[in-house]
Image (cartoon, rainbow, N blue to C red; front, side, top):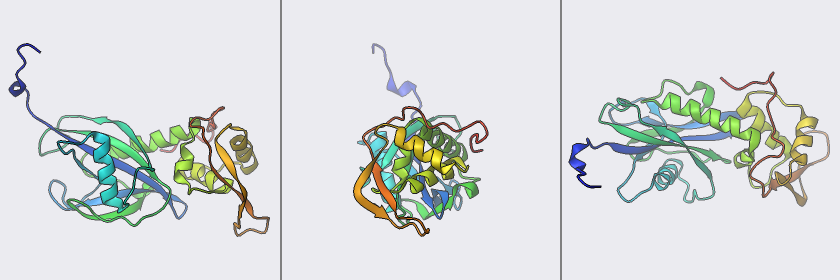
Length: 239
């Protein structure tokens, strides 16, 4: 652009922050790291870091996810951009714009602190509060996004192993939504949604009950639910 002077604008940094969710012991958990450096040394925060010069935001997010979880390959995990947080003063060091992502893990690797993190830990979502920076807001926004998307997409299967029972899938909805669903009604809706799940031929899993083993399913080819699997007004949305 004619007359453009790059020195006329104050430089700022770009980071990525990750709201990483999994189900553990029947509760929704989020991955948090204890900051090892100022600002907010000793406070818990979402994992993340600064973009390197040769990285896109998504590349940086996947790098940070691999570092914090210890997973060698994160390419198959669900990772989606949440939104951009750019309020002045959100970081006391300098002007920092953060591109936030939400990630879902179907299994439970034990995390370890990467970069300047002193420790990393899975924490129940309901106890994760008073985080550094504006991470409380980012985490709440990510929880809302995930809960809403369960209504109209097949995202719930991202919390499940490769083969799962309908009971395990139902527990995903119940845990994220914070409500109890009617089992026959849930089963009917899932099986009536084209491409949501596919049966694994001849496979079943003992569930610990007195009934017959539960059939196993895997994620189908669909990405959206028709019709949506909506929460009722009585169930509402989690706080």
